[in-house]
Amino acid sequence: DVVVETPTPPPAAPEIHVKVSSREREIFPDSTVTKGELADYYAQVAPIMLPWVANRPISLVRCPQGRGKRCFFQKHDAGSFGEWVHQVPVTEKDGSSEDYLYVTDADGLVACVQMGTIEFHGWGSTVDHLEQPDRMVFDLDPDEGLDFAVTRDAAAHLRDLLGEMGLTTFPLLSGGKGVHVVVPLTPRADWPAVRDFSERFARALEQADPARFVANMSKARRKGRIFVDYLRNGRGSTAIMPYAARARAGAPVAVPVSWTELRDMTSAHPFCVRDGAELLKRANGRGLQGWGVADQVLPDL
Ligand code: ATP
Ligand code: MN
Ligand code: MN
Image (tube, rainbow, N blue to C red):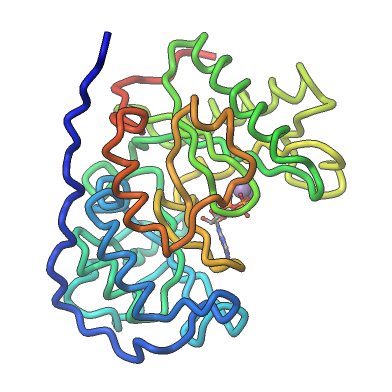
């Protein structure tokens, strides 16, 4: 059968109201990517990025003078982002309340870039269900020197095991070294339940295959293995958001892929901020339709 695909035109870049200053500043000196280019990249991918990042408490990696200069991880509002970046009060462990940041639109993303942001990290829950995660993530962190194929195959192994439990999963290339296995959830169970599930699952992986997996964060114990970082699943923990740029050499971005595509991938950073047009096109292709979407709850472990 000949399947005729009707090409969906890529979404038009939304109109941006935020003024970006110092557009010519090199934020990625190694690849000459400027602040203006980075802002344009986020405006361009906003239509495919916002479904994941909008209305979610975010933490930012800010490098106001560019990558390689002073960078910092910002969780709380400092009151300087302007009208496009919103605040949500979150009760901390000690009972105090802190304002976390969230955005709802392309201007919000660009306003963060204007403030020197390179990376967007997000909570596993959204502001309307702060205490009930809508995703669990296994962040596979390979030991230095491990071939990407090892991480790739490990991710597929997690897919199989979680699939046997009835869970649909989606791979995200981190833009760095590893792969995140994303498990969408109907926001119903609370944080301790999700964290507990992820920890037990990670420990079971190590127990079944200790030559390949380690559930302990210690670098010393990682030797030739993959750390199954389940700690992204605690309340207040974050993980890199789909299509976020990374403050690493080459201006790479985190990218959702299909399980089929992942089989042929040779690195966790095949795309960079100059690939915006291609990312938009890909996102409309059949392989990525429905990425990250599944209405499901965790089974009892
Ligand atoms: P890689 O594939 O290279 O591991 P990654 O995004 O998974 O890329 P990790 O180092 O495994 O990077 O994960 C770090 C996570 O920890 C980030 O996703 C971020 O959300 C979170 N994080 C918490 N605190 C910080 C901090 N101070 N600086 C950077 N990241 C932090
Ligand atoms: Mn990682
Ligand atoms: Mn990690």
